[in-house]
Image (cartoon, rainbow, N blue to C red; front, side, top):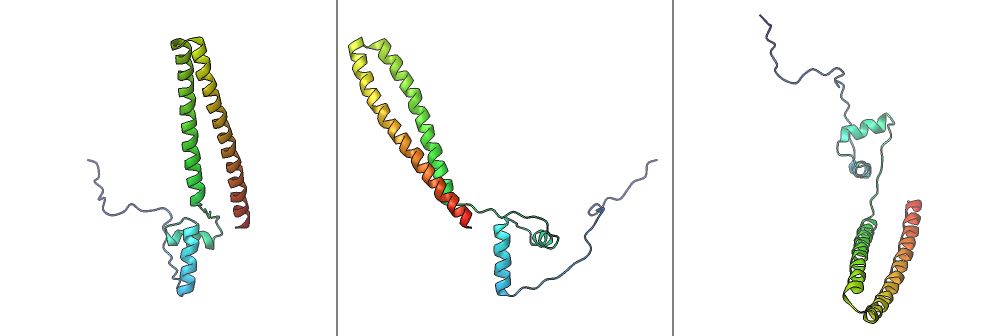
Length: 143
């Protein structure tokens, strides 16, 4: 007959943490410590202290809300730009098949003007993106 094991409680750990150290902070030290934890994106105080004590590397990530908003707006703009490209193709096909040659040429001329305007807007957006990237890199280098 097989032996029956009593499985109660947690399973034993090979290298259990049995030693405890207590650290006390004053208010200024505590604020500084919490600030460091937030910058390192850590939630567990004990893990963060271990990393500091044993000189394990920890990452400090800074997020810039303006960069996130700029990237979202830029992505939205390019999505609209792709939509315009698809519609452009459909309009040209419809002009070729549904209108006389003179009427189609007149409308294509208007479409060409609108395309040139859109191209100039696109160049402005590229210039703004380069300027924003330059400013963002300067801020990154200063911090």
